[in-house]
Amino acid sequence: MSNKKSIGSYYTPKIIADFLVNYLSDKLNDNKFISVLEPSAGDGIFIEAIYKHKQLARKIRRVIAVEQSKRELNKITNKVKQKTFTATHSDFLDFQSNSKDKFSLVIGNPPYIKKSLLKKSQINFCKSIHEKANLADNRPKNIWTAFLVRCIEFTSPDGILAFVLPSELLQVKFAAELRELILREFDRVEIFTFNELLFKDCKGQDTLLLIGQRKSEQKGVYYCNINKLVDLEEGKFALAQNIKIKESKWTHHHLETDEIELLEKLKSQLHTIDNYCSSKAGIVTAANDFFIVDKETIEKYSLQSFVKPIIQKGAFVNGSVVLTAREFQLLIDSSKPTYLVALDKNSTIRKNARMWSYLEIGKQRELDKRYKTALRDIWYEVPNIGNAPEAFFFKRCNEYPKLIKNAARVLSTDSAYTIAMKDNFHIESLIFSFYNSLTLAFAELHGRYYGGGVLELTPNEFKNLPTPFIDIPLARFNNYVIDFKNKSSIKDVCKRNDSLILKSFDNSLDDDSIDKLYNIREKLYLRRIKTN
Image (cartoon, rainbow, N blue to C red; front, side):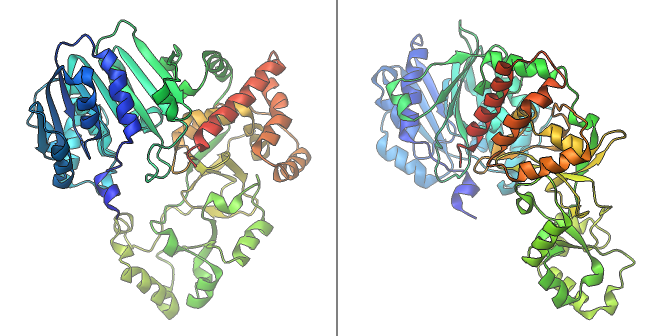
């Protein structure tokens, strides 16, 4: 495990620290004296910037820097000698439990540490902080959420909070309560997003600046997207308020008000995709690299009687809307893992020495002790295998979401949601109808992105996608399959079919509106992949 991942230390670029301090100095201009808290001081970049700022330095009554690394704290104390400065060697989660102080400015870059890397004591502190703030979901997904919640409490009645945060704040479901909390606690909220990655070592992690002012005459939520970091230094940015944001997920801030109004108007006329089909997660093996095998492994361990064909991930079916038996055979022939080891109580494995030796490999790897396998009556019996679905929707994607007809009649892992059509609806028509700029734009808005721009939709986010539906004959779908496979990008498909699909439910849509929807999808897509 890398040290940066375990302690969440991705230090703030100097240009960001200097910008925030300079920018906030005007907002703190009315304060006679200021007190500052930096809850995760790191190498002291914010502390240095504050003391170097002449206007702020004259007003400082006290500055407290909390840092759990003694080595990093020593770096700060070697540079900052002012009597108003206090360096506290502590985990912030310990510090906060013994402090009731309020600060005119709480500034910093909270650590980014997933729950799986936290100590039990840290998890308990985070849970307690969430509970005290009356958050319904008190289970910490990442340590930064507890830092944010507690530091809001540390902000004085007329104070300011300024944090560098992951853009998960705008996107993910677990942050929804945090967004509501921010709106309740601050008169004015400013969000700066970036077209450049701020932290090159944290690949794919999109970042934003959040500024919350307890008191402001200019109330509301204001947004600004920064094209290049140098624009911050040169003041080449303008904050804009989008009054529609409160009615929507915060990812909508990338759009203009008229664009949001168009999306919401059309959404109100449509069913969601779960009107046409039911969906559920695919098979959870708990160890894909063991339970999903290639043809060589089958032959080596005589698994032929114990396997079923399965598609493991969406990367195996790029570029098409149908997985055919021939295409699946090509995956088999290329030695891709394409078979699920599907054992049950009726499997005669003890009569097959080579099969048994394969299971012994799993035990040597302690797969039987993993959380999900340990819950099973027999660790190697994968539950809920069922039958091959009509189609798959892969929950993660790059260029566009993948809804694929399962002509090969194979199973799927939980990398996909399995699709079963409801009465009087056909999968071919649903796939044809799905690929339009409106539905794909809502996929960008409903989902979240991370890891180099990968888009992910949860089960409910998929089920709630607004989707038109046109019933087409099979012959037309077969031609569509060929056209889809020959596309240069998903833009070709949208250009070709948007007018037909979108006018099917709103004949009043003009070409300008259809073009606007096309551009909205493209704008959201380009915004997402900028992290690549």
